[in-house]
Length: 532
Image (cartoon, rainbow, N blue to C red):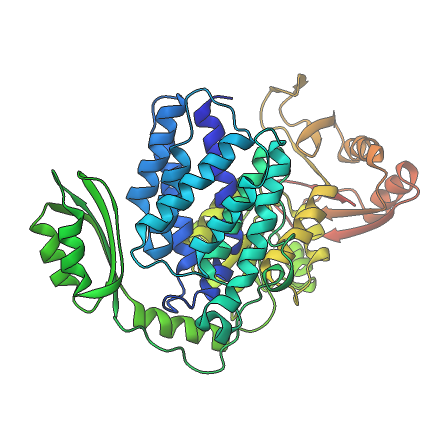
């Protein structure tokens, strides 16, 4: 794997962990202002890094480090995103060409990341992501250079967890709200994804290792309206020019607001400031160069929206399912599915349809079950477009979706439900029986048009002239997994075997398994089978 692919895998892991928890990070956001966008800003900043990696032609480690640094600066969103971009900049300064990551490099990278982050903030405040990155760096520095990288990363994460937990005591705003710092927690979430990839581990479920206040930061409740920020507009932009004088612009903008951050170099500066007069800010900037990527957000409106969300959010999680067939839809409803989107093979719903279904739900927490391999990416796109906390469980068949619904617990949040539901999908097996639409080769087996074919977990295991015969071949394949329960979903086709014949076949091939046959009514597939 070259440097670009390794970097992409790392950033993908950071995006995955952030996406799981960005709604929670948004709700934790009370400092410096309770505008509820820290999770989103961190996610968009990291996604900009990923986009820049995709557009990098070379795979040289140095070129990749430059791309990551550029992507973080150009795409930095909000106060937290700008500080993150400087941590990234410092870390990448230690990514030397050809060097494999080890503890010595980790120590140097964290030192540089910490120094760059502190330099970016004119008046550093403890109890923020600055404190967290400093404590993580200090933990690494206490280790010898030849310590195993995995041990060093675990020590860094342990120190970060403690630092996040301590933020509640360090800032009055956090203490009053009873939460940890959103930026610090977001930084820890990012490092969790990076650490798991570097150590070759499967990505952990959200917050699985966090103790104390950080273990279950919980979504804060709202006892009274949040205090509005001193200044109204969060204003950010890129300033391009030649021989840009950072101090000159900094002096002018300090008189117009607070939370001022200017990072970059003499040719490109990322500017972030809270102000009541964005126009005056931009006027000062255009006198020095050209501006781009201008973004102005009304923090007072964001605070009110966050308060409204916290005040009216019901407990628990609702599930949106993509399902074809009236009988199947009824099964999902009986198991607790709150909204059904019609679709499946050859009738894939759009992201807009999935978003509309989520928007009709009362709560902020949702799980989407795509129930078809062609719908998984669409569901993930819909989740990324929504301000709600949405987890996509990548179910690729209706039987897999039913297994997930059996594991569903409406009292759990979306992240915890996503974990248990995805595990149910992972350990189960799905089979499909249908007709070949043309002569072809499938898994090195010749299949004739109109022949009955049976697939288990996407692999052809049986073919023949009769549905019942192929069904028995599928059962033989499923017997390798020793299932306890077999669920059969029939279509409305007149040639579907009788319930008695299906039950008898299961009894012969899997005598230990319970069997349930339902009239699913799905198109294209005379039989769908789930094994648990």
